[in-house]
Each structure stands twice: as structure tokens, then as C-alpha cells.
Image 1 (cartoon, rainbow, N blue to C red):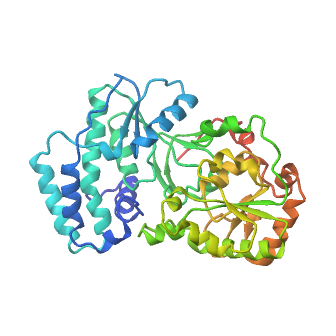
Image 2 (spheres, one colour):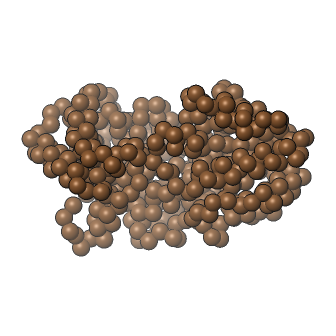
Image 3 (tube, rainbow, N blue to C red):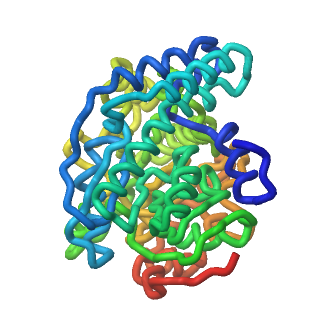
Length: 414
């Protein structure tokens, strides 16, 4: 963290201490002893010895429930069938040296006075995880590293350290906008999974990447079979795909950005007005999993849509497996937006609260609904069109999965 002439290091230092993180709740920014809490958490973390296959690539995921998805995804898009998957929340050391405790003490004391205390405190956890990853790679003679957690604020630091050791680093962001977490990137390869991400790249000055890979969305293999012979969506049906922002805010989660909560509330009000005015339409609400566990979940939607033809999708009806259940999908923001478009289904975005998404010049601008009048007109026009007519009219051809995957690898110069 010393001053450096290397622009990559200066960017890395700044972003590491200022980027948004979800690993701690929003209240951590006001918690003077958060450093001491992080220190205690990491030395109390239980040791879980990972199984390993010598010389096979190493894969990093956030939680254990992502292991299977990561293995399937990488195996399907590369020649690697044997993978070593490490889970961030399980990484620790068998022994903590004195210099680590001195480092943790220094950071914990700094957190008492520094407004960047949440990001600083996480350094205590992160250096342990970096060490565990580096030790695992060295011990098992691994030369490739796949990062499924590039949204974490320390991802570039870890990539820099591994690349300095001669390890090839491939990062795998989600299909959503790169702007939220990835305007600065250090890696050998980056996997892109939506046309919108290609539109964003010219706006990023600090991407230190050699190649871009085009892969389908990371969950695609899990729902592709549902669309091999899918029926046409029924007319007069609308789907609302929730990001669950009202629950996240109530739980104290950090703000995701993109004005999601404001735009979700705008869409819900538009839908309520539309359904009361046009009673032949039915709405299916696809809740976010976080909502279903909230005690106010049912009453939130039943009160809001009282007197309308609205149903809540049952828990077994997974959103990504049932895009064909509704003719038109609306949402404020979700990776489901890009998955629906990739499979060729009509979709709109609520943008009453103006943000940087979508960027100027993107065809996604044609999907934006910012007031009730445009909402009503857009839904009626789309209702009368076929999927092909909808995509052609709004310039969305490149968003189909087949078009996007035509170019598998792109070399870039930085």
C-alpha cells in the first residue's frame, strides 16, 4: 500500500479502500470497533481442509452453494474437467503468525478514527484469504485461477498478487452491468456474458486485461433444457421480477445502486394502475428469494395489488426456468433482464429514477419506462407484437444468445 508510480497499483489502492462492499452491513461504517470484530471473526473461522487435484485449476467462489455451479460452468466452456474449488468463507490459516496479529491490531486501531473503517476492517479478513489461496496454488502446482468473486473489492489485489507469481487469472462477472463493480479490472482474461457488457467496455479507461471471452450467462446450463421446446407466452400476461429492495433495506443491506428501490416502487405503482384500468391482463409476481423469508412478504403484495388479477409465483416456479409463462417482463434491475433478452423474451426496465444505467447509445434505452404514460403505451404495443418483431423494432438483435456467442474470444490492447 506504499505510494507507487504504477497506475495499476495507485488505482488498486484507491479502489480497495473506497469501493462498495457487501461483506459487511451498512452499519459497519459507523462501528468504531469493527476492526476488532473482524480480527476475532477470522481467527475464529473453522478450518475446512479442501480436497484437491494436483495441477488442476483453482476456482474461487463466495459460498459453498456456488461450488457446483462454478464447476459446471467452467467445465462446459473450457477443456478443464477437474477443478479445485475454494470457498472464500471457508478460507483460513492453520496458524496465525505474530506479524498478522500486529497487522490486525494496527488496522483495528485505525478503524477507531478512519471513516473508511468498513473497507479497512475487511483487509484483516482479505489478507488471510489471499494467503490461503496463494498457499493452495503453490502447494498443488496450479497455474490457472478462475475468480467467481470479481465483484469483491479485493479481487484486483488478489489478481495482481497471483499474476506476479505467474498464475493465469480469469475473472467471471455476472451477466449484469460491469459499471457497478468492474470499471477497474486486472486479469489475464475476463468472461463476458451479455451484449450490454460489450457496450460498456469503451467507457473503461483502466482495464488491464489481455483477452475477453464470450460465454453464456453462468446459470444458463441449469435452465437451457426448459427452452428446447418452450410454448409461446400466453397473451395478456405480465411478469414483475423483483430484486426485493424493500426487504434488503429493512435488513440494513448496503445500497446496490442503480436506483433499484425507487424504480421498483415506480413499477409497482404503474402495474397497479394498469391492472385496475385493464382488467383483462394478469400479473405474475416473481419474488426474490430474500422476500419469501420475510414475515411481511405476503401482505406487502396482497395489499398493494388488492382488487387486481395478480398472483405470486409459487416457490417451485423458478424465474429463469419460466420466462415463457409471461408475454411481457418488467423489472427495475436484475441479471434476469439479460437472461430474458438472451432467450428472446419481451422485457422492459423501470427508470423513473434516472441513473447511469443503461448507458447512452445502448439499445436498452429503448426498453426504459420513466412515467405511466410511456409504460401503458409500451406494454400495449409490445402486447400486439411477436418476439421477433419486438426485438427488430427495438434494435436488440445482438442481445440474443446466438448472436452474442458468435465471437468467442476478443483480444484487447491496454
